[in-house]
Length: 266
Image (cartoon, rainbow, N blue to C red; front, side, top):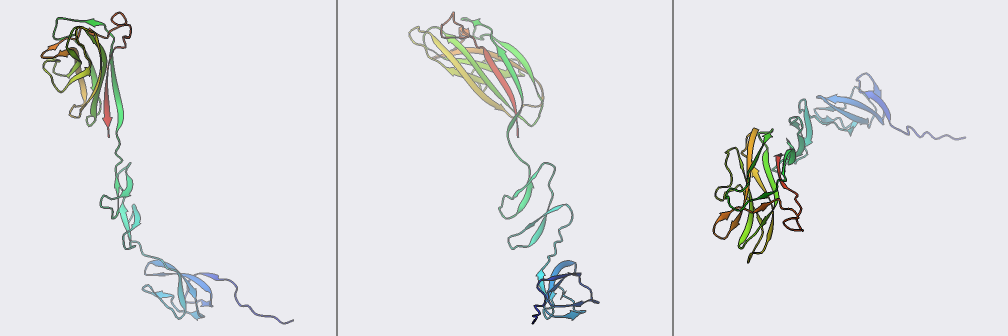
């Protein structure tokens, strides 16, 4: 029976190239050229034929099967490529940072995640029923809270219900003050108004809510004073009922005055 010599039917891994070995076609080897490791395949029988020199293959005997690259980026770096495909190293950022496309859109850098979240909340509630018709200062009560984070913004939320009698009492206001010891004098940035309306002696009910950011408030303990009044056409007068109940109007429930002071962190 006749036989046919097919020769090699697969590549043969000969390991690391050695000048003392004899190589046949389709042998492949690993060779380090100037610090760069590449894999080469033999295209002719050879001995002591270096696969490449300074990155240039010895093409009469060897061809690159997998050409290595030199990446001199140093330690503790993330390897990326630039717009030309060249590899480069980006130094690690600080703890908790993330790798992102830089602001110029042409590379990478590390940045800190920024997000707003509520870190601490102080809650005040006063359900005291107050009926006042003569004093311009209204009813006043006080409290204190501690700001923990100096770089946080303090956001103050107020909600309340009030009731007025008489004509032209068109606003119900709750005022607050931090640390100065006084409250609701003339109109100021810390005044909060809930809109209501009366006319011809009819009754009016008022609800209000407001938020103010106090970014300049330092960490530490702070004293707060609250007061309330209604505003009429040309002068400021007290609200007659704060935290009204069903005795004032069947539609009312004494849900109380609430104040929330949040610390908003980035």
